[in-house]
Amino acid sequence: MLWQSFTTRRELTAVPADFRGHRVTVRRHEPTVVREPEASWWEVQSRPTLTVAAVREGDADWHPESVVGRLAEIAAEDELLLIFGATRRAMTQLMIAQLREHLPWHDVVPTPVRHRPAELLRDAATVEHLLDVGSLPVVVTSPASINAVTAHIAGYLRVDRVLRVLADGALFPVWQRRQEASVS
Image 1 (tube, rainbow, N blue to C red):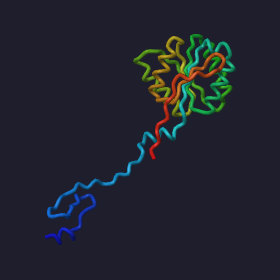
Image 2: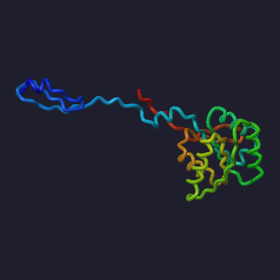
Image 3: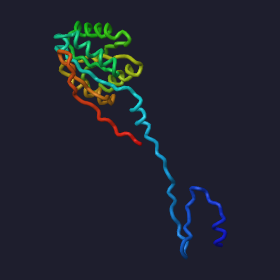
Image 4: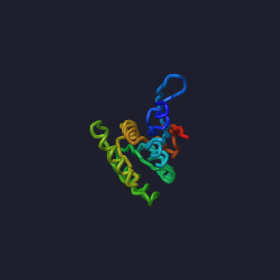
């Protein structure tokens, strides 16, 4: 009988038996698992950095050329989403025109968004679609709700960083995603 147990072929995943000693003991076979990094890790590594820049109408009034110049620099380095807090339609049109002039290779698309909780999810999905097709969306909202709209859309899109663009074109980092540890 002992001879039969040595000559019997078992599948690789079968439970191995230990024949040392007088009693036959059964050991559970733990297969070797080679684990690949999860799909979400690969997606994070391959996608460009998404930056949200928030600008208030009053800041853009002071030095619009420096503000638009800084936004063009960000758009050249990263994928950009601009959230513009404005009440005057003329100021919004001026900002869009200057962005189109500085970024001729981008499709600048103004997207009006009101701070209404029932509509924010739909608006964030619209912005995500615009980013997916390669556009530069400019979310136009009221100056009073710019922080809430920025936070909601940035959370929905899982952005890499949020910047506040000040009147002189200076960038103030509001939030930045920490680097994820690599799996090796």
